[in-house]
Image 1 (cartoon, helix red, strand yellow):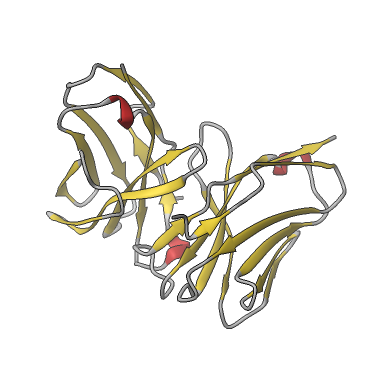
Image 2: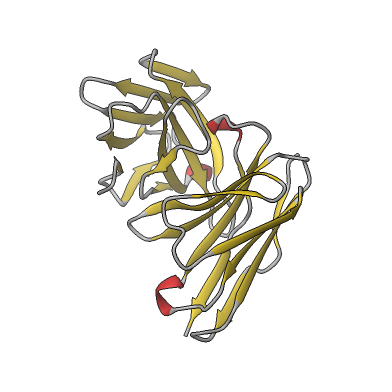
Length: 113
Length: 113
């Protein structure tokens, strides 16, 4: 049973608009959440993270929101750019540990020019 | 910049063959990981190593073994490859055990026929 779920395998957005990628988790013990971006033929790279003691973290065009009661997090990209087209993985961790990372299945974001 | 290099990008092997996937990192990281990525399942941890000659099973270790004889090198071994091991394999390393410090290699696509 997947503890971290990304229910949308793909998302298309027009350039300049907002992209919203969603992620749900089931384990209430997760206390650290991350987003990774993956381009074709490259490994995933860390994008942004949030601790469970916060409900929002912002880094430039990227903002992650955490709703603990709903066990839901989302990644907002504003404005979206064609270079943002990639697969985005949500991940959750116990105690922020790299050993205890659980990944979602990924969402392919396509930003249309 | 951290570099995690996976020597073989694309491999085709026959059922029953012994397969070695090699990974080298250049940042003197203690921790190294092997994941496999499958459609709809995200990244799943196969094995983790926190020091030379030290290893821990991940979530899906069956059918795999690992070797860490030198700090910079972490090998994944399929003793007798099977078709259900056809997948993308990702190596990663981190300097500490914090989840947002993981660096991934570019991946190795393995097809077992």
